[in-house]
Image (cartoon, rainbow, N blue to C red; front, side, top):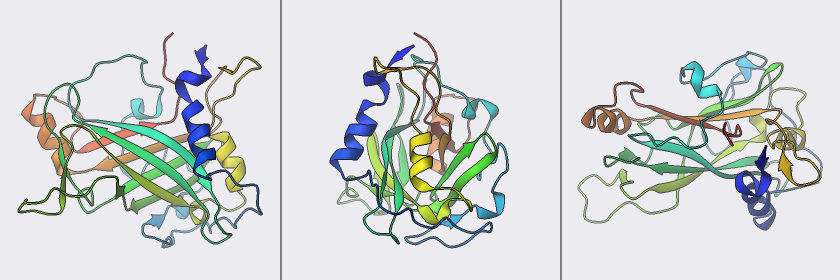
Length: 237
């Protein structure tokens, strides 16, 4: 079993400190069709209940727990803290922090709009897709570098981070945002030790030419222009 403090405490603490936990009336979920979302992006409501759906087609391993310690070459994407905020009924959303790095080798540069396609997010439960959206914009935590000819790119050589928001409108009909948020957290016992995987799997993926260019330059044979990550508890002791 894995200590809760080593994996998920920062999720809850960060969410509480930033006001991301709310006990107010839950906002309405979205319809079972694709709709434009407030702030940008499009919901995957037309895919509600679909099992294994990802807007960017991903390998099967992308939906599995990652090995706990795996030095991997090339660019990396990881989840930072994530939570649920409801400042008012119409602005409720899941906040998801993204951590980018170039990996053990190479320098990663991606467009600030991530290839013009933004980010794709899926939340899946036992009965298939619970919520999803694509084309979500990224709010970067650092400005573009000055003096660069192309102002639309951010250099992530030393690592970089950003945030996306998944509006509650992206939830499939009948799902409650607060219940989904709770389902994204792994179960723990009385000793605050994680005892299993979350009920809902959160998958985030991005596609940008800079990712593929870096992989090609260092000889990484697979992955192309895609990076993905999820909220599953890593395997291993």
